[in-house]
Image 1 (cartoon, rainbow, N blue to C red):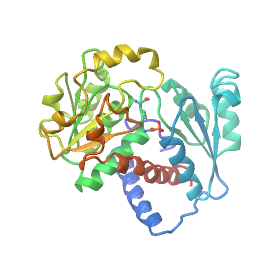
Image 2: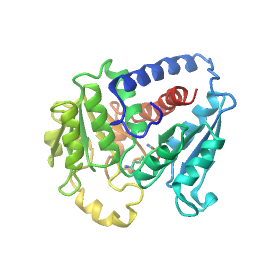
Image 3: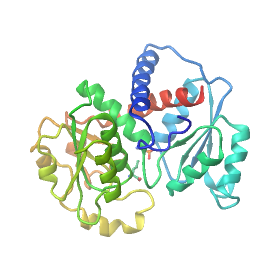
Amino acid sequence: MKDFLSVSSCTTQDLLELLDLSDKLKKYYKKGNRDLCLVGKSLVMLFEKPSLRTRMSFQIAMSQLGGNPIYVKPEDIGGIGKREPIKDMARVLDRYADGIMARTFAHETVIELAKFAEIPVINALTDWSHPCQAMADIMTIREHFGKLAGIKIAYIGDGNNVARSLAFGCAKLGMKIVIASPKGYELDEKSISRTNEIAPGTTTQTDDPRQAVKDANIIYTDTWISMGQEDEKAKRIADFQGFAVDAELISLSPKAKIMHCLPAYRGYEITDEAMESENSIVFDQAENRLHFQRALLKKLLS
Ligand code: CP
Ligand code: NVA
């Protein structure tokens, strides 16, 4: 495993090893210990989109391992793939740094970086996937339920990057996911069939959120308007009516844990009440970004 570009490109064994290492390092760090395995190593962090959680958790994880995180805005380097080809940029960074993480619009950008850099490349969200989020979420699910096998996630909303990474995580790790989206916003058919080839029955799709949450252990949602879709805001808000995670939907599966990758747009995909409910584990998910990525950096860079 050189890179971490998607959940789908990792083996189940890789994913389980990463989860176990995340748990182990979480406990170790919570006791006040430090594992300085990345002293003298640098991570270049390229961001084409805004970020709170991803940027801060990677930066802090890298520092906690003794390494040096370097944040780069696209405008500082003349844009990714604009001032010079991505393949040239990748080979230059390869000569300086020990790892690259990138948050980009096109998924092809992280693939191109990984192809031309010999150092590890980590996907910190693309339009296609958000594997660090999905793995931190799965770590959180395992902490709360003590297992992954047989867990059912009801994902309510946009069939987007987060939904796709979760679906592949489910396929690789023995969970099931029902995705409830309005017509036109479903997860693409190819991703659904691929997850069902990996593990038959992993992913099902519906346009009825009430049906999706039946017997669910988890009710998960994400924004209706992902970064880069701001121009579609009015249409999306209209099209997603009836798909909010609210008290009424939660009442159909009252024991289900509530998850959201954040940032949350309260009053749209999730109500304030749902975010603050006693079953909400959204801040555990956010915390586990740090613990998962610390393990990922140790595995790939040390
Ligand atoms: N969930 C997540 O990736 O948050 P940021 O966009 O703030 O990094
Ligand atoms: N689907 C969202 C996730 C944000 C963390 C986006 O891509 O903007």
